Image 1 (spheres, one colour):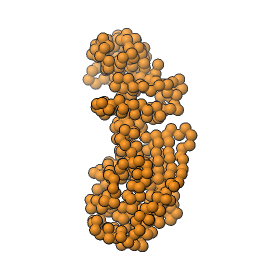
Image 2 (cartoon, helix red, strand yellow):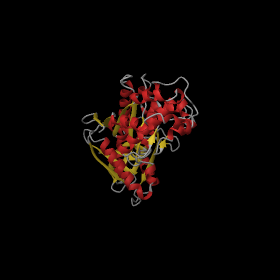
Image 3 (cartoon, one colour):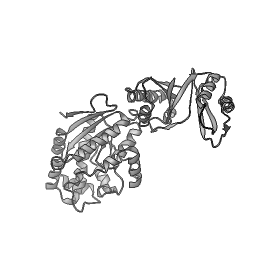
Image 4 (cartoon, helix red, strand yellow):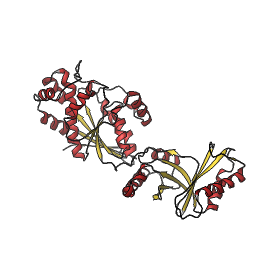
Length: 398
């Protein structure tokens, strides 16, 4: 029988809460693999076993597991009875005909009631493999490692481990709302919170019909990529051009960018509360643009009444770009678009504003009315993975 053995890392340190975290990961794995012919997903003694059905394709299962937060590593394994002779026989049969190499056996005895300790399991199986193949044992620099694991009523062996995403399973860390631009930074910021177990909701501000729909299309594509990691996502598309026009009329040019961002924070916070999110997430990086100086970040954050998380705050652009490439969002983010932040942007934005100056400028705006109207005009789209039925469901706020 073919299985996949999933190992987790941080979950093993959760003490009395560990069963809840493991059950959350089991449910996520079931949901991610539900259309791939998986027969069973179950937790067994410090690991999770996925039993593959007859129609399950390893490559499909592997690609989906690699996306799921909470998984340290996983491997396609062969299942045998929890019997040392049966395990050794199965391993010898599996290596028959493989090219000669230096090898080692790495065994783990999860159930200490099994009468043979791990070093003896390694010695017995290693001797059997060496006798059958003539391969040399090399415990320090093996060309092939054969992994063997024994649990209560089962044993498994495998040859290669696949790297998982790490972190915590989605849903274990609460809910946050990410301000998603069409750029490189904010999708990476969202991923970092998803990887910490946070269910992430997205809000994108656009300036259609003054500008094209390109930024909205990019936001949808980015959410589609990120949904592979959390299986279900919601995207709020907020029309922002009417707000910007009022700011242009009432606010001095150097202050406009900061006030745009304060209004975005207020709108995002209202939507976050509707969706049950407890914090906002941005892709801010200190000093990257004029609105991201320490002074301006503080003034923008002051518009919020919930925490504002900035997971990339100390990163440089090269580090963020590399992560975006690994994540698969980079090629989408670099597509040229008409971003709302480029609309009505002053030539010389203020880099060091203060609360007093900004408050005075905002006194010329009907802030509450602007926020409420933007929310009223917001479009909501839901995304699901795997896409068994509709890839996207669309609705309006009421």
